[in-house]
Every structure is written in structure tokens, then in C-alpha cells.
Image (cartoon, rainbow, N blue to C red; front, side, top):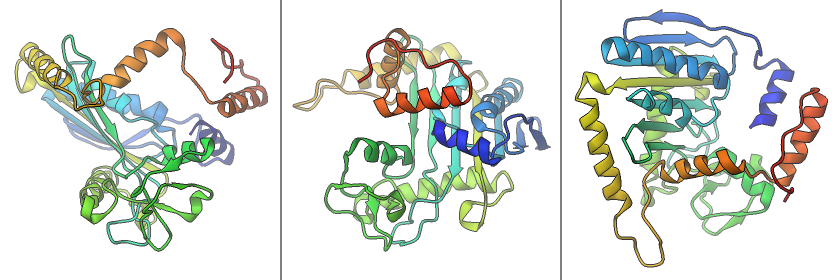
Length: 305
């Protein structure tokens, strides 16, 4: 997405130096006009506002419209979890997902994320698109030549792929809702995608993409655990719950059972020490764009692969 961000700044679709404008506010809620600012920059501030409201009244909820892409929204949910709160975030952007039985795209990948703190276990963090596959995964599959599994995409008439396929032209396909087909539960992914659309677009007073809405819309919420129950007891019970999941006997052929956020937490710990692996083509792009923008080149910890 970084190259898309650079392009949007260059085109003027996004503004590099902008504030925000609170257009409606109550003790527990706020609606923000991002004024074409990047949600990666403004998102943490929006969640901070939600956290402060939750600290005062128990729950804080903030919507943001007229914004850029948010990046991985689990990051914002974790900002609340780090403050002994439950974080909930959603995003609506683009229009590449067909409804169940539909031949035309009507929704974006519309991810939903929730994070909850624990004491000794890695925090619970669920962050997933409501589509069968995230948009960036399609671009990655195209870049490395990987095939997509059946039920991930549809042709322009809405027919699902029934065999593994490679992507040649992303514009020639649409993405199916989470579940793929109606028989496999795509109506559930379709419903979750619409739920995110309501909480981000309509609740912020803006239009969804299917009605001509532009840029992205976001939802940030924080639930102060202390307003509902004892925080220490909550974290102890979370530890017990997550450990119970983690120590579930695995099926033959699998080493262990994971819960949402565990593998990502382990990767984070490793990458803080060993760096982040990047595809050679991505490194080449970084070298090009940092030179073009007169920035320091990206630091390499090992040989290019």
C-alpha cells in the first residue's frame, strides 16, 4: 500500500499537512472530518480520543470520514488494549466485493478488528477482512505468482472460481465475501461487511462507496473494562481462557492450536530483533522512491532474497 500512498499524495487525493475537524461530539462520541488526511496518521489520534472518552464515561466511540487508508486496523484496537480496555475498529474503503448472488461489487473488504488485554498471555487480537481474501493478498499473490484457492474470487459475472487460479488482471475479477459461496456461508461475510459499512459510512454521516462515497471511513471504539468489571480479574480470566485455547489438543498433522493474535505477537517479538523480511521487488521500490524523495535508504540487516 505504501506505493499507493505516495501516488495519492502526488495526485493530491490525500493531503500531507492537514488537521481534522470534529463536526459532532458528545461525552462518549465524536464524528471527525479528516479533511483528506491519512488515517494512518490520524487513526491513532482518533482512538486516543475514544480512549479518553471511555476513561471518563466507560465507552468512547469515534467515527471518521473523508480520510485516507488506515493500514492494519488491529493496531488501533491494540492502542485501547494497552490501556486495559477493549478496542474495536472497522473500516470501509473501495468497492471490490460482490454481495452473495451478486455480479457487481458493492462493498469494500471492510475489515473488523477487536483487541483485549491479558496478563501473561499474548493479547487477543482479531483483525480480518470481511471478504474471502484481503485486497493486498491478491496483489501479493500476483507478485509472487501464487494461485488463489477456490471460492476466493469471482469473474465479472459473479461466478466463483472452482479451481485454484492465478491472477493476471486484478481488474478482471471481483472478490467474494468471507465464506465464498452461499453454501459455505458467504451470507455471513456479506452481513459482516455491511455491518462495517453501517458503522463507518452511515454512522459518520457520509455515503458508502456504492452510493458515490469517496476516500475511506473508519470507526474506533474503546470499552473501559473497569467500568464493567474488575480489570485484574478480567486479565486473569483472559489468561485462563487463552491458555485453554492454546493448549487444546491439535488434530493430527498440526503442531498446535492458535488463537487470534498469538502468531502475530510472536512475529512482532522476532521482527523487533531480526528485522522485517521483504520481497526483493519491494526493496527495489524502496531504493527507487527513497532516492526520488531524497530520503535515507531502508536499512538492511541481511542479504537481499
